[in-house]
Image (cartoon, rainbow, N blue to C red; front, side, top):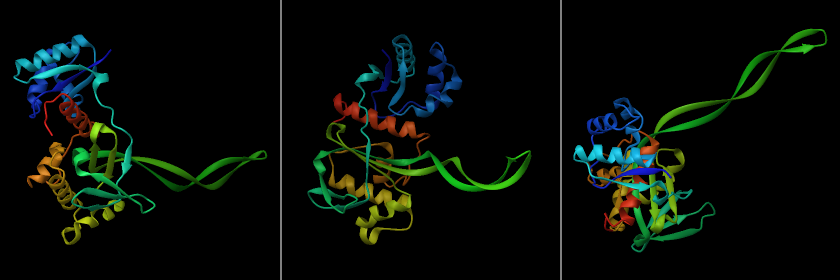
Length: 257
């Protein structure tokens, strides 16, 4: 059995508090703040043995940070994403178009989490490259020009949007600064701009007004407050851990919808 240490308040521990905490936990050092601490958003750590999780809870309590230790199995596993392509805002529901142009209505009351923010994603691209290879030709060798696929791994910052429904039954997803997301923001009408971060912030603001019962992650909250149009998460894991934490906060009654 493995355990997670869950933040129970809305304000996350500071980097300095995490650094001091890791120093007090057997098997961890202050340097772990650069790895484990980077993903510590709501779900501060996962996969710990009970003894280590309890030691971390005690160390955080000494820093004035209240947490709870829970089994990893109680945390909600996010379902596979469904791509958001084109939507309409109506008083009753968010109308979503599928690839066949059919509309599926998502009632505003069924939306429990709206999450948005900027983070770094790993991408893979395939290019065709020309190269010269040496091949046997009878008793000799010959040079031959060939074209081969080459896969490149790159990391690039992107804007993410996630909409989670009741019971985490369905998850809608968009990478808001990719070309295909341009259609998503047509619902903004005259408010649509060339800047993807501005469009995402306005989209989230409209959604939050229509679904007042939805819980917002830090990124969506700051977009609605107009103080940060693209809140940055240090890792993709941090972004999705915060969503898992929000679902746990809702299910445990710590956050009321």
